[in-house]
Amino acid sequence: MSIFVEAVSKTYRVRRHEPVRALSGIDLEAHDGELVVVVGPSGSGKTTLLRCVAGLEHPDSGRIDVGGSDVTDLPPGERDVAMVFQEYALFPHLSVRDNIGFGLLARRQPKDQVATKVDNAAMLMGIRDALDRRPAQLSGGERQRVALARAIVRSPAAFLLDEPLSDLDAELRTFMRSEIRALQRRLETTTLYVTHDQTEALTMGDRVAILRGGRVEQFAAPADIYARPASTFVARFIGTPPMNVVPAGLLGAGDGFAGLRPEHVRITPDGAGRLQGRVVHEDALGHEVIVHVAVGDEVLLARSPVPQAPGLHATTGLDYDDTDVYAFNADGKARP
Ligand code: ADP
Ligand code: MG
Image (cartoon, rainbow, N blue to C red):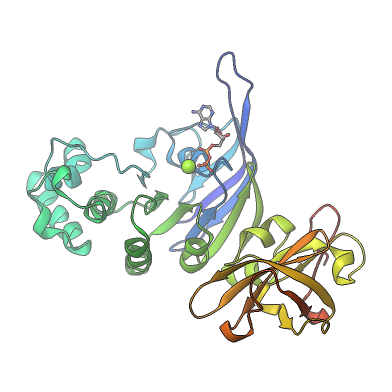
Protein backbone atom coordinates (compact mmCIF):
# COMPACT_ATOMS: atom_id res chain seq x y z
CA MET A 1 0.00 0.00 0.00
CA SER A 2 1.25 3.47 -0.84
CA ILE A 3 1.58 6.40 1.55
CA PHE A 4 1.03 9.99 0.42
CA VAL A 5 1.80 12.99 2.59
CA GLU A 6 0.61 16.21 1.00
CA ALA A 7 1.40 19.74 2.22
CA VAL A 8 1.37 18.69 5.87
CA SER A 9 2.10 21.41 8.42
CA LYS A 10 2.12 21.18 12.18
CA THR A 11 2.79 23.78 14.85
CA TYR A 12 3.04 22.84 18.53
CA ARG A 13 1.40 25.39 20.80
CA VAL A 14 2.43 24.99 24.40
CA ARG A 15 1.04 27.50 26.89
CA ARG A 16 3.42 30.29 27.86
CA HIS A 17 5.91 29.16 25.19
CA GLU A 18 6.56 30.42 21.69
CA PRO A 19 4.76 28.22 19.14
CA VAL A 20 7.10 25.71 17.44
CA ARG A 21 6.57 25.14 13.73
CA ALA A 22 7.64 21.50 13.53
CA LEU A 23 6.50 20.78 9.93
CA SER A 24 6.05 23.26 7.09
CA GLY A 25 4.33 21.93 3.98
CA ILE A 26 5.77 18.41 3.86
CA ASP A 27 5.25 16.48 0.61
CA LEU A 28 6.34 12.86 0.67
CA GLU A 29 5.33 9.56 -0.87
CA ALA A 30 6.22 5.91 -0.50
CA HIS A 31 5.12 3.55 -3.24
CA ASP A 32 3.71 0.12 -2.47
CA GLY A 33 6.53 -1.98 -0.99
CA GLU A 34 9.03 0.86 -0.91
CA LEU A 35 11.29 1.75 2.02
CA VAL A 36 11.57 5.52 2.32
CA VAL A 37 14.05 6.90 4.85
CA VAL A 38 13.36 10.24 6.50
CA VAL A 39 16.67 11.63 7.72
CA GLY A 40 17.63 14.91 9.34
CA PRO A 41 19.28 16.44 12.36
CA SER A 42 17.65 16.40 15.79
CA GLY A 43 14.61 18.67 15.91
CA SER A 44 14.03 18.69 12.15
CA GLY A 45 10.52 17.21 12.55
CA LYS A 46 11.09 13.50 11.82
CA THR A 47 9.15 12.14 14.80
CA THR A 48 6.35 14.66 14.31
CA LEU A 49 5.99 13.58 10.68
CA LEU A 50 5.81 9.91 11.63
CA ARG A 51 3.32 10.62 14.44
CA CYS A 52 1.13 12.49 11.95
CA VAL A 53 1.13 9.47 9.61
CA ALA A 54 0.39 7.16 12.56
CA GLY A 55 -2.46 9.40 13.72
CA LEU A 56 -0.85 10.26 17.05
CA GLU A 57 -0.71 13.93 16.00
CA HIS A 58 -3.19 15.80 13.85
CA PRO A 59 -1.67 18.11 11.20
CA ASP A 60 -2.89 21.72 11.18
CA SER A 61 -3.24 21.47 7.42
CA GLY A 62 -2.52 19.05 4.60
CA ARG A 63 -3.56 15.52 3.83
CA ILE A 64 -2.37 11.98 4.56
CA ASP A 65 -3.40 9.06 2.43
CA VAL A 66 -2.63 5.38 3.14
CA GLY A 67 -3.48 2.71 0.60
CA GLY A 68 -5.62 5.04 -1.47
CA SER A 69 -7.85 6.33 1.31
CA ASP A 70 -7.67 9.63 3.15
CA VAL A 71 -6.78 8.87 6.77
CA THR A 72 -6.10 12.45 7.87
CA ASP A 73 -9.00 12.44 10.32
CA LEU A 74 -8.90 8.76 11.32
CA PRO A 75 -7.75 7.71 14.81
CA PRO A 76 -4.52 5.61 14.98
CA GLY A 77 -6.40 2.32 15.46
CA GLU A 78 -8.18 2.68 12.13
CA ARG A 79 -5.12 3.39 10.00
CA ASP A 80 -3.63 -0.09 9.56
CA VAL A 81 -0.11 1.18 10.23
CA ALA A 82 2.28 -0.17 12.86
CA MET A 83 4.73 2.21 14.52
CA VAL A 84 7.93 1.12 16.27
CA PHE A 85 9.14 3.77 18.68
CA GLN A 86 12.71 4.66 19.51
CA GLU A 87 12.26 3.50 23.11
CA TYR A 88 10.40 0.25 22.16
CA ALA A 89 7.70 0.75 24.86
CA LEU A 90 7.48 -2.94 25.82
CA PHE A 91 5.31 -3.95 28.78
CA PRO A 92 7.81 -4.94 31.50
CA HIS A 93 5.40 -7.29 33.36
CA LEU A 94 4.40 -9.26 30.24
CA SER A 95 6.32 -12.09 28.59
CA VAL A 96 7.78 -11.59 25.13
CA ARG A 97 4.94 -13.77 23.79
CA ASP A 98 2.28 -11.54 25.36
CA ASN A 99 4.08 -8.38 24.35
CA ILE A 100 4.04 -9.47 20.71
CA GLY A 101 0.44 -10.70 20.80
CA PHE A 102 -0.98 -7.88 22.91
CA GLY A 103 -2.35 -5.79 20.05
CA LEU A 104 -4.08 -8.75 18.39
CA LEU A 105 -5.66 -9.96 21.64
CA ALA A 106 -6.83 -6.41 22.35
CA ARG A 107 -8.61 -6.57 18.99
CA ARG A 108 -10.30 -9.78 20.16
CA GLN A 109 -8.65 -12.08 17.63
CA PRO A 110 -9.04 -15.79 18.53
CA LYS A 111 -6.31 -17.00 20.88
CA ASP A 112 -5.10 -19.92 18.73
CA GLN A 113 -4.74 -17.66 15.68
CA VAL A 114 -2.82 -15.13 17.76
CA ALA A 115 -0.51 -17.89 19.04
CA THR A 116 0.32 -18.97 15.47
CA LYS A 117 0.95 -15.41 14.32
CA VAL A 118 3.14 -14.65 17.34
CA ASP A 119 5.12 -17.80 16.67
CA ASN A 120 5.66 -16.84 13.02
CA ALA A 121 6.68 -13.29 13.85
CA ALA A 122 9.08 -14.53 16.56
CA MET A 123 10.58 -16.98 14.08
CA LEU A 124 11.06 -14.22 11.46
CA MET A 125 12.90 -12.11 14.06
CA GLY A 126 14.87 -15.06 15.45
CA ILE A 127 13.56 -14.72 19.01
CA ARG A 128 11.49 -17.90 19.46
CA ASP A 129 13.75 -19.01 22.30
CA ALA A 130 12.92 -15.84 24.19
CA LEU A 131 9.11 -16.06 24.02
CA ASP A 132 8.66 -16.91 27.72
CA ARG A 133 11.09 -14.31 29.03
CA ARG A 134 10.32 -10.81 30.27
CA PRO A 135 11.79 -7.71 28.56
CA ALA A 136 14.21 -7.17 31.49
CA GLN A 137 15.76 -10.58 30.72
CA LEU A 138 16.63 -9.58 27.14
CA SER A 139 19.60 -7.84 25.56
CA GLY A 140 19.07 -4.52 23.80
CA GLY A 141 19.15 -6.27 20.43
CA GLU A 142 16.53 -8.80 21.52
CA ARG A 143 14.23 -6.09 22.87
CA GLN A 144 14.59 -4.37 19.54
CA ARG A 145 13.50 -7.57 17.77
CA VAL A 146 10.48 -7.93 20.06
CA ALA A 147 9.38 -4.40 19.18
CA LEU A 148 9.69 -5.25 15.47
CA ALA A 149 7.89 -8.59 15.92
CA ARG A 150 5.03 -6.72 17.60
CA ALA A 151 4.70 -4.60 14.46
CA ILE A 152 5.10 -7.53 12.03
CA VAL A 153 2.48 -9.67 13.75
CA ARG A 154 -0.25 -7.23 12.78
CA SER A 155 0.53 -7.53 9.05
CA PRO A 156 -0.09 -3.81 8.67
CA ALA A 157 -0.32 -1.89 5.40
CA ALA A 158 2.76 0.07 6.47
CA PHE A 159 5.56 0.13 9.03
CA LEU A 160 6.55 3.41 10.65
CA LEU A 161 9.93 3.03 12.34
CA ASP A 162 11.30 5.88 14.46
CA GLU A 163 15.07 5.53 15.00
CA PRO A 164 14.63 1.84 15.88
CA LEU A 165 18.38 1.17 16.08
CA SER A 166 19.57 4.23 18.00
CA ASP A 167 19.89 2.42 21.35
CA LEU A 168 22.07 -0.38 19.97
CA ASP A 169 25.87 -0.42 19.89
CA ALA A 170 27.57 0.29 16.57
CA GLU A 171 28.22 -3.32 15.59
CA LEU A 172 24.70 -4.54 16.28
CA ARG A 173 23.29 -1.47 14.56
CA THR A 174 25.11 -2.32 11.34
CA PHE A 175 23.90 -5.92 11.55
CA MET A 176 20.27 -4.99 12.31
CA ARG A 177 20.31 -2.47 9.46
CA SER A 178 20.77 -5.24 6.91
CA GLU A 179 18.39 -7.56 8.82
CA ILE A 180 15.57 -5.01 8.75
CA ARG A 181 16.20 -4.24 5.10
CA ALA A 182 16.13 -7.93 4.15
CA LEU A 183 12.98 -8.52 6.20
CA GLN A 184 11.23 -5.51 4.66
CA ARG A 185 12.09 -6.76 1.17
CA ARG A 186 10.73 -10.19 2.04
CA LEU A 187 7.47 -8.86 3.52
CA GLU A 188 7.19 -6.11 0.86
CA THR A 189 5.57 -3.85 3.42
CA THR A 190 5.68 -0.13 2.64
CA THR A 191 7.91 1.49 5.25
CA LEU A 192 8.77 4.95 6.50
CA TYR A 193 12.06 4.71 8.38
CA VAL A 194 13.28 7.63 10.48
CA THR A 195 16.93 8.14 11.42
CA HIS A 196 19.41 10.94 12.10
CA ASP A 197 22.20 8.76 10.67
CA GLN A 198 23.04 9.53 7.04
CA THR A 199 24.87 6.22 6.54
CA GLU A 200 21.75 4.34 7.66
CA ALA A 201 19.70 6.49 5.28
CA LEU A 202 21.89 5.88 2.24
CA THR A 203 22.31 2.14 2.85
CA MET A 204 18.67 1.35 3.69
CA GLY A 205 16.47 3.66 1.66
CA ASP A 206 15.00 3.04 -1.77
CA ARG A 207 14.53 6.77 -1.56
CA VAL A 208 15.64 9.25 1.06
CA ALA A 209 13.91 12.43 2.23
CA ILE A 210 16.25 14.89 3.92
CA LEU A 211 14.45 17.05 6.47
CA ARG A 212 15.67 20.42 7.63
CA GLY A 213 13.68 22.66 9.95
CA GLY A 214 10.38 20.98 9.10
CA ARG A 215 10.87 21.09 5.34
CA VAL A 216 11.97 18.49 2.80
CA GLU A 217 15.33 19.70 1.53
CA GLN A 218 15.71 16.86 -1.01
CA PHE A 219 13.80 13.67 -1.81
CA ALA A 220 15.57 11.25 -4.15
CA ALA A 221 17.31 7.90 -4.47
CA PRO A 222 20.53 7.62 -2.39
CA ALA A 223 22.79 7.62 -5.45
CA ASP A 224 21.14 10.80 -6.77
CA ILE A 225 21.48 12.55 -3.42
CA TYR A 226 25.15 11.64 -3.33
CA ALA A 227 25.79 12.62 -6.95
CA ARG A 228 23.61 15.74 -7.00
CA PRO A 229 23.05 17.27 -3.55
CA ALA A 230 20.31 19.90 -3.90
CA SER A 231 21.92 22.33 -1.47
CA THR A 232 24.97 23.04 0.65
CA PHE A 233 22.98 21.67 3.61
CA VAL A 234 22.61 18.27 1.93
CA ALA A 235 26.23 18.38 0.72
CA ARG A 236 27.47 18.93 4.27
CA PHE A 237 25.12 16.29 5.71
CA ILE A 238 25.89 13.37 3.38
CA GLY A 239 29.14 11.45 3.09
CA THR A 240 31.82 10.26 5.54
CA PRO A 241 33.49 12.68 5.81
CA PRO A 242 31.04 15.01 4.05
CA MET A 243 31.80 17.32 1.14
CA ASN A 244 33.98 20.38 1.68
CA VAL A 245 31.83 23.46 1.07
CA VAL A 246 33.75 26.73 0.84
CA PRO A 247 33.32 30.20 -0.70
CA ALA A 248 33.52 29.56 -4.44
CA GLY A 249 36.37 32.04 -4.89
CA LEU A 250 38.76 29.76 -3.01
CA LEU A 251 38.42 27.11 -5.74
CA GLY A 252 38.34 29.67 -8.55
CA ALA A 253 34.68 28.87 -9.17
CA GLY A 254 33.12 32.36 -9.25
CA ASP A 255 30.34 33.44 -6.84
CA GLY A 256 28.44 31.56 -4.17
CA PHE A 257 29.79 28.33 -2.73
CA ALA A 258 31.83 25.50 -4.13
CA GLY A 259 31.81 21.87 -3.02
CA LEU A 260 34.61 19.34 -3.30
CA ARG A 261 34.55 15.83 -1.87
CA PRO A 262 37.48 14.85 0.39
CA GLU A 263 38.23 11.95 -1.98
CA HIS A 264 38.75 14.48 -4.79
CA VAL A 265 41.32 16.55 -2.91
CA ARG A 266 44.85 15.36 -3.69
CA ILE A 267 47.77 15.94 -1.36
CA THR A 268 50.75 17.26 -3.33
CA PRO A 269 54.28 18.26 -2.28
CA ASP A 270 54.65 21.64 -0.59
CA GLY A 271 54.65 24.33 -3.27
CA ALA A 272 52.98 22.17 -5.91
CA GLY A 273 49.25 21.99 -6.58
CA ARG A 274 46.61 24.74 -6.96
CA LEU A 275 46.24 25.43 -3.23
CA GLN A 276 48.69 25.77 -0.37
CA GLY A 277 47.87 25.12 3.27
CA ARG A 278 48.92 23.83 6.65
CA VAL A 279 47.79 20.56 8.26
CA VAL A 280 45.81 21.39 11.41
CA HIS A 281 44.58 17.88 12.22
CA GLU A 282 44.81 14.29 11.02
CA ASP A 283 42.34 11.44 11.63
CA ALA A 284 44.31 8.22 11.18
CA LEU A 285 41.78 5.52 10.25
CA GLY A 286 44.27 2.72 9.65
CA HIS A 287 43.64 2.23 5.94
CA GLU A 288 43.69 5.96 5.21
CA VAL A 289 44.11 9.36 6.83
CA ILE A 290 41.63 12.23 6.80
CA VAL A 291 43.90 15.27 6.55
CA HIS A 292 42.48 18.64 7.69
CA VAL A 293 44.27 21.43 5.84
CA ALA A 294 43.83 25.13 6.65
CA VAL A 295 43.73 27.11 3.41
CA GLY A 296 43.26 30.82 4.13
CA ASP A 297 40.27 31.05 6.49
CA GLU A 298 38.87 27.64 5.47
CA VAL A 299 39.70 24.07 6.41
CA LEU A 300 39.57 21.49 3.62
CA LEU A 301 39.42 17.75 4.32
CA ALA A 302 41.35 15.37 2.10
CA ARG A 303 41.29 11.58 2.12
CA SER A 304 44.85 10.46 1.82
CA PRO A 305 46.64 7.12 1.54
CA VAL A 306 48.69 6.61 4.72
CA PRO A 307 52.18 7.13 3.15
CA GLN A 308 51.17 10.47 1.55
CA ALA A 309 49.82 12.05 4.75
CA PRO A 310 52.02 15.09 5.39
CA GLY A 311 51.87 15.01 9.20
CA LEU A 312 50.52 17.49 11.72
CA HIS A 313 51.58 21.15 11.22
CA ALA A 314 53.27 20.39 7.87
CA THR A 315 52.71 22.78 5.00
CA THR A 316 51.39 21.04 1.92
CA GLY A 317 50.03 21.59 -1.55
CA LEU A 318 46.53 20.48 -2.59
CA ASP A 319 45.21 19.74 -6.05
CA TYR A 320 41.81 19.01 -7.55
CA ASP A 321 40.06 18.82 -10.92
CA ASP A 322 37.49 21.46 -11.92
CA THR A 323 35.17 18.68 -13.07
CA ASP A 324 34.89 17.52 -9.44
CA VAL A 325 33.77 20.94 -8.16
CA TYR A 326 30.07 21.39 -7.30
CA ALA A 327 28.60 24.87 -7.72
CA PHE A 328 26.07 26.35 -5.32
CA ASN A 329 24.43 29.78 -5.40
CA ALA A 330 24.91 32.24 -2.55
CA ASP A 331 21.55 31.06 -1.08
CA GLY A 332 22.96 27.51 -0.86
CA LYS A 333 20.90 25.95 -3.67
CA ALA A 334 22.73 23.80 -6.19
CA ARG A 335 23.34 25.52 -9.51
CA PRO A 336 21.66 23.51 -12.28
P1 ADP B 1 13.08 15.04 15.43
O1 ADP B 1 12.33 13.77 15.61
O2 ADP B 1 13.56 15.28 14.04
O3 ADP B 1 14.19 15.22 16.43
P2 ADP B 1 10.64 16.30 16.43
O4 ADP B 1 9.58 16.01 15.44
O5 ADP B 1 10.66 15.50 17.67
O6 ADP B 1 12.08 16.28 15.71
O7 ADP B 1 10.56 17.82 16.86
C1 ADP B 1 10.43 18.89 15.93
C2 ADP B 1 10.29 20.19 16.68
O8 ADP B 1 9.05 20.20 17.39
C3 ADP B 1 11.36 20.41 17.74
O9 ADP B 1 11.65 21.78 17.79
C4 ADP B 1 10.71 19.96 19.02
O10 ADP B 1 11.25 20.63 20.13
C5 ADP B 1 9.26 20.34 18.79
N1 ADP B 1 8.32 19.42 19.48
C6 ADP B 1 8.22 18.08 19.30
N2 ADP B 1 7.24 17.55 20.05
C7 ADP B 1 6.70 18.57 20.74
C8 ADP B 1 5.63 18.67 21.70
N3 ADP B 1 4.92 17.62 22.07
N4 ADP B 1 5.35 19.90 22.20
C9 ADP B 1 6.06 20.99 21.81
N5 ADP B 1 7.07 20.97 20.92
C10 ADP B 1 7.39 19.78 20.39
MG1 MG C 1 12.70 12.10 16.88
